[in-house]
Amino acid sequence: MRRILTVCIGNICRSPYAAAVLTCSANASVAVRSAGLSDKWTGAPAHERMRDIAAARSYDLTAHRAAAVNWDLLAWADVVLAMDTAVLARLRERAATDTITTGKLTLYLTNRDVPDPYGQDDSAFTACADIIERGAHRHLN
Image (cartoon, rainbow, N blue to C red):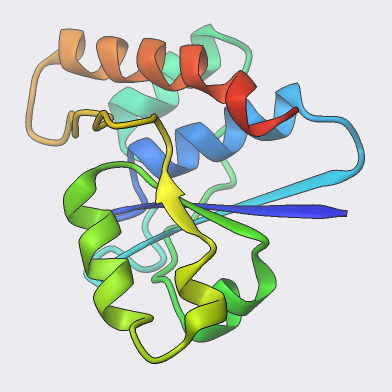
């Protein structure tokens, strides 16, 4: 089984949406989880706007609760998909002493960030969801 971990800052917008999209698009041989760099939102549900967009597109984020990335999750994953270059850099800093983990780290999109919609209007959430959906296929082959 291939195991994918998606990571953003708070695990309330981008990474849970990416995990839902990947989970729904994958076959049974792929498991997906999500986490955030910050523990500020640990236990919080997905952002309301992201939940609404997900529901409108037949993805379910209602059971999601934010989790902070930790060594257990990093060890669990075969690949760790950072939503942007800043998240990737922070993950690399945390994993600097673990070459196996460092080799798992990559961007969700090749050489491009998934913009963080947090604190922005509905159009930013919609654009974020569109970008995540368009990029999902590259992780499921």
